[in-house]
Amino acid sequence: MYACILALLLLPWDVAFKETRMFFSATFFRVATPYREMSWADFLLADIITSLAKPLSDCERALCHLLSGPVMLPSSTDQMCGSSSWIIPAGLSLPYIWRLCQCIRTWKDTGNTGQAFNALKYSTAFPVIILSAVNFQVSDEDWNKFWKPLWLIAAFLNSAYSYYWDIERDWDIAFFTSPSDQKWMGLKKPMLKDKLQYSRIFYVYLMLSNLALRLAWVYKVSPHLRQNLLTVLIFTLLEVFRRFQWIFVRIEVELRKLQISRPELGQLIPAPPPKEILSADELMPI
Image 1 (cartoon, one colour):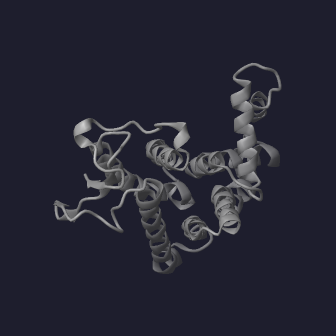
Image 2 (cartoon, rainbow, N blue to C red):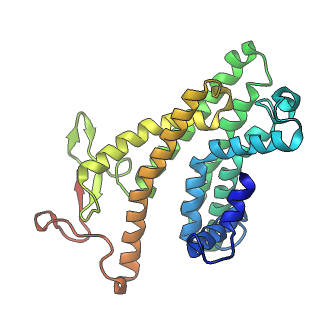
Image 3 (cartoon, rainbow, N blue to C red):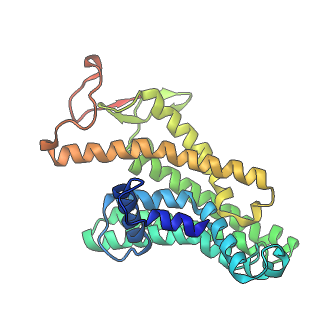
């Protein structure tokens, strides 16, 4: 099955959307070899792949069993391919290593310090993965007394940092740094651009749902939480849904930047109804 998927993706004939397949293959190759100059498509695909770390790790485990011994006898390859094996955290870490290398390369090429902080964000995933893998190497008593609190701290730090980055940098919503003076339920309202692709309530929904789904993300990179297969499936699908939502506003922000830097392209972001139009530089609270 894996070989058939790869063959279909690389099929040289002009069938099955050849141009799209070749573009995806080339982009994925650049993501997996992040030592060259990056395009925005490389960044976007790499971000999406981080949300697929769990499915990719499962594929890695399946291939390991197929290549290591009788697949009908899982116990025969459990030491090499099971939950206690080093290949599980290694597979989970790979998408974050790729994205980390992209940020470091872009920081080196452009001098943009924002990319250094972005690299730091991806590096916070590694303690979560490593500490979770430790659970299979230590006793329950040692885990509960020492390692589990460290894992909880690492998971909270990663989720908090990632949530901040989603809101302030990826979506360009001023909430933590310069919120509105207006309040709602005791919290200051976030500031949005005056020209938006979607309804303002949609951005509020995204902020709230992204917070909840970011916390659910812990399941994805924690092998020791993967005993209940149905629960794991649900949380994996939730992470895919979170990334699906994230893409819409992330592309909107990139189009807005492109519209400013290259005005000859014309209007890329639809203007709001006339009654909502303000000055180009003004921000509006939700």
